[in-house]
Structure formats: C-alpha cells, structure tokens
Image (cartoon, rainbow, N blue to C red; front, top):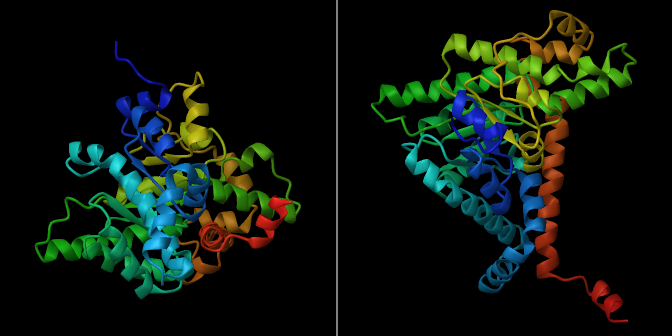
Length: 364
C-alpha cells in the first residue's frame, strides 16, 4: 500500500495533475516539496509578503547590498533583492529540476508590472530573468504587449509563464504565441525539449470580478453558481488545449474555494496553491478523485451567462487581444501588482532612509 503525505501528494502520485507552491518562501516551499510540489510561482504581492515574513533571513543581506552599492537608487536595490529571493527559491527546486530531466522544478519570477504595455521592455527583462538560474521561468502578463512578445521570447529559449490572465481568449492567445515560438525554434533546428512553458488562468480573480458585477448590476444569481465562474472557464480552455495539442501547460491560480482544487484533479495541468490552502486541503478528508473530465452543469453556465463579462471570458472568441488590457480583472490585477511593487520598494527605502520621526518618537 503506497504511503501518501496528504491528499495533494496522493494527487501528484496517482493522477497527471501537478501542483506548485504559490510563493518563493523557503519555509512554505520546503513544506510543499515534501508533499509532491514540483514548482513555485511569485509575483510582486507574493514577494512582498515573503520579504516581510522572512525579514530575519534577509535583513543583513539587504544592508550589505545597500553598503556595497553606494550609488544605487532604491529601485536598483529592490530589484537585486527581488531577484535574489527568486534565486533562493529556484535553488530549493534545483534537485527536482535535475531529476526530472529539466522538465519540472521551475520557479516563476514576475516581470515589472509597469511594463505591461512595453513589448520590448518585457522581452528584455524576460531574457535577463531567464539567465538568473537554469530553472527560472519568467512571468509576463497576457496583455497586448505580453502576447506580442511571447513568441519571440520562446524562440530565444525563455520558458514563459503567461499570467494576469482570466479568460479563455487570453489563455488561447498566449498558447498560440508560444506555439509560434516553438515552431520557429524547430524550423531552425533549435532544441526546445528544455522549455517548459505554462499559461496561467487566475480562476479566483475571475470569480472575484463576476461576483462584483453581479452585485453591482443586481443580478438574481445564486451565490453557489458564482463559485463556478473560474472553474467553467478553466475547463473550457483545457478542452481546447487538448484538442489543439498546445505544448504549453495550463495552470490554475488565485485560489478562493475548494473547487479550484477538486474540479481540476485528473487534468494534465498545474495547480499553484498558496501555502494556507495546501494545509487546508492536506488536513481535509477529501480524496483527489479525477473530475476534470466532468463538465460544469449547463444550468450553471446558463445562469452565469447573465453576466456579459462572463460571456466574454467563457467564449473562445469573446475578446480580441486589443481588449485584454481593459478587461476588468486585468486592470484590477495590474493595479494590485503595481501597488505591491511600490510597497516592496518602500520596505527597502525604510532600510536605506530610516524615518527619523519614528526614531525620535521611539526614544522618548
């Protein structure tokens, strides 16, 4: 009888479904790896929380970077620490990377959220980040600029994680762009076996937006039905990925409820989970029974179709690439990531320029 270290570990051993840790925290990543996780993700909000949580591990290093680079601006120090946080997470995953013939064990590092309109800026930063570690995967947004650079980055050998994506049209556009890059590499005889691209759908942020719209517009929708928005879009996208044979792997992110785990078990997908959700799932008596093949109740889909933006998110042609940048969840998430990055820089600023008012107040 096999021994499993919780339901998530059992899932990774008995189904094609993989899971990642939604953080580069050393403590959280170690917990996840011990229970079957084979990758990790990060973004400005995640890295900010990691830095605050693990400040005792980083304080001396931050002060050393500040001292060793006396002309650096606070943003330069911030990017240095940001990348080092990602590199430490990548190092923890390196054994998985090597033992899987370099197909698993990636750490996703997010590009600058301010570059969401800058195709060339995203490409340049993606190339630089990819060089940080052999198992570094680079996150770019599914905006017009992000989609425009995805084929070129893939061609140059960057394993991408196309994120800030909430809809079927966005993940299909990302997968198509990655395919273009892979075909171009193959046409020139370049190896692509070491590339492991993924395309993220932030299912919980899809739910958040649809709930907000349903409340704003006074729609008569069951709260239970609103928990299925992201699941419905993810399952529809997965079916199309399988039909078209995309080589990028679909990834579910932004967890809000248990359906974001149980409904995707059995699919050849990745589930990136915050540590708190991992603990909740592992302490539950829920078994990882395959359900990806089960369609969402048509009555639920019909009810959700009352929301115009759900129809846009669910239909493969519901949006053009030009519309991605103004889609509600895209704008909300870019704003969150930008605010988190500025807060991260603020933490570094406080170490470079400690607030003298606080020091005076504390000395009274």
